[in-house]
Amino acid sequence: MTAAVNRAESLEEFRVRARAWCEENVPKGWREQQLGAVEDELVSFQRNWRATLQSGGYLAAHWPREWGGSDLPLPHQAVLAEELARADAPRLALYQVAIYNAAPAIMHFGTPEQKQRHLLGIQNGDVWCQGFSEPGAGSDLASLSTRAERRGDVFVVNGQKVWTSWAMRADWCFMLVRTDPAAPKRHGITFLLVDMTTPGIEARPITQATGAAEFCELFLTDVEVPVENVLGPVNEGWRVSQTTLASERGVTILELAERLHRNGLEGLIDAMAGWTGEDGRPVLDDPSTRERLGGFYGEVQILRAMCQRLIESMTAHGGVGTEASVIKLYYSELLQRFMDFAVQVRGLPAQIAQPLLLSGGWETGNWAHDFLNSWSWTIAGGSNEIQRNIIGEQGLGLPREPRAVGER
Image (spheres, rainbow, N blue to C red):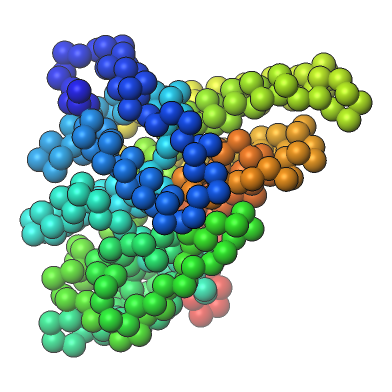
């Protein structure tokens, strides 16, 4: 059974088919089995789950058929996200960047040779990381200083990247580098596809507050990248990069919203049925707790409605506008408040539960761990401060903030 969809198949017919596949293929008890697993075991589990999704046609079902996808329409993608969340399917943390960030940029800007090599490579299990942020260029990404100097048939790259998820496991990295230091900030930047086995690349994992260490520092010393690995025009990498960021803020939020509904809200309600407070009474007996829970239920439904409107807008007009920034901003701050509430209600047991280090997100059911991890979502995909600027300038037509003296 595959995810291939003919245009005559209704959403409900597809939902029945996707739900049946999930019931048969989602590993039973996978969370419990992965508790305490070492990193190699967790990565092996992700690789096996990727192969399962691929065999069913669900790995990158939204891709064109020529590259191994199913041309899954947006409404069907939303249904698939709902069913994967409903089945508590593992998220593909190891392949998130490859499928939802690298692939869209390569499809839009890649040469035929780049598409053939990399899109099929992703289908076959290549892991990608994203070399955007730097120690001095995070929210203000256009201030990046990693440089690439052309020398004959190669660009020689020197600099440092940070918060590079899964760099220590990646086969490839798509990277922004400055190729014209004299150009204004958003110009003179080039988008490179970098083989992670190239000499001069060092990835150092960073242990986080949650205990996980998928983020890395990336040190680049005289790294030679062939000229044919430039994606899009030289010095126009900023424009290329917006494709990856729009995807991260847009379509990928659909599944996150459904997981917040299924794994977060409904998971918390189910768990609270067995919780008691310090006074020994069921926590759900407290009127204020029920009131706050009801409020979160309403907010999550608003989030889902916003996602549905995004799907309708993308179906009608194509592309992702400021709606994606609005949803990302709303989702990330709702997630933080919800996880804070879960930790408060659970009390001390929330502080001592064992985390699942490779959940692929916040939805582990370990509420303190998930609360800590939720803070990353105000940064991932463009910080919330940047999202407010995008909404204000592009959505509301507000004037840009005056530039600092000397800034280009």
